[in-house]
Length: 464
Image (cartoon, rainbow, N blue to C red):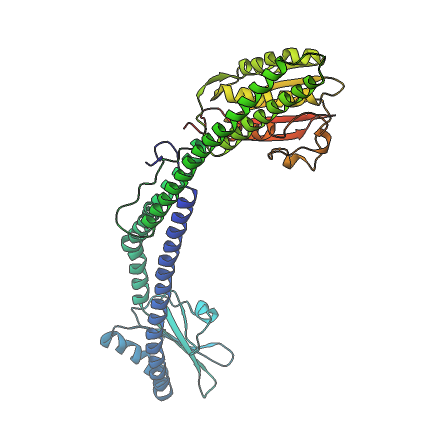
C-alpha cells in the first residue's frame, strides 16, 4: 500500500538536485562552447600571424632593395596574384611617416589601435580583423606590416550562429532532460518518505512502499523499507497482544482483591480497628488499578496501538464539557474555571481522548491552586492548527523540570506532597501526539503554568 495519494511529498530535495544537475550541465556546455571558441580564435590568429610574419620579410627585402617604388609595385602585384589585403607603414626614428601604402582592396587600417593592442610573444597584434607586426630596420626606421583577413570574423560569426542553432537547443534539451531524469529517479524516494509520514501521522503499520520497476538501488531501498515495516508491524501487534494479556492478568486479580476487601469491609463493624486496615487496602487497590490502567493507556497510545474516533469538535463545547466535569471539584476548593477565546474554533479529533487530556491538565491545576484560585481554559486558531490552553495560577514548575514533566512517573520536588502517579502529563503528551500535534508548557506571567496542546485542524493522526 502506498500513501502517495494521501500524503503530498516534499519536492525540495528533488528540485534542488534537478536544478543543480541542470545548472552543472549548462555550465559545462557553456564552458566548452566559449573555451572552444577561444581556442579556435587563437588558432586562426596564429595562422594569420604566420602569414603576416612572412609578408613582413618580403616587404623588408623589397624596401631595402627597391625603396618606395618597389613597395608600390609589390602591393599592386599582390592584388593581381593573391588578392591579399595588405598595408605597409614605415616610420622614421622620430615616428614621422616615411612610407604608407596599401593594396587597393584593403579597408582603412586602424594603425593607432594596432599600436595600442597587446602583442603576443612574436610581437603580433590583432584588432578589427587586422593582424599586424613590426620590426626595427638597420636604418633605424620602423617597419609595420598589417594583413586584413575576414576569415576570422566569418568563422566567429558562424560560430556564434552555431550557438543559436545547435548549442542552445542541445543545452535546453540537456537541462530539461537532466532535470526530468533526476525527478523521476527520486520518485521512489519521495514515495518512501510519503509512506513514512503517513505511518507517523496515522499509525497505519500496514502501509507499504510500491517498489519501482526493474532493479537498482531504489528498488532495494523500497524492499528493505517494506521489510522493516513488516517486522515493525509484527512487533506492534505483539505489543498489543502483550498489553492485552498483561491487562487481563493483572486486572482480574486486582478486581478480585477489591471485591474481597469490599466484602471484608462490609462485614467489619464500624468501631473495629480492622476496618481502617480494610479501608487502606481498598484505597491502595484502587490506586494500583488506576496506575495500571494509565500505564497501559500511555503505552498503547505511544505505540500507535489505539484507534482514534475522529469527529468534528467545537472547541468551545469541548472546553465546556471539561469545565462542567470539574465544576463541583472546583467549588469545593473555592476555585473558578473560566473559558475564554473559544468561539468559532473547530477542528477534527477524538473527543473522548482529548477531553481526558484536558481533564488531566485541569485536575493537575486543581492540585496546585494559587491565591487567585483561577483556572483558564482557552482555544486559539493559528495557521493550520488549533491551540487548546489550560492556564493556572499555581506554584508553577521550576525551569529545570520543564523538559522532564512529560516523562513517565516523573514528579518534581514541589509536587511530591500532592497525590498523583506522575503519569497524567505523559498520557496528555501521548494523546496529543497521536493526533499529530505537540505539547508545550511555559511559565505563566506572574505565577503558574500555561499548558498548550497544538493540534492540526483538518486531520487526525492514528486512526487504526
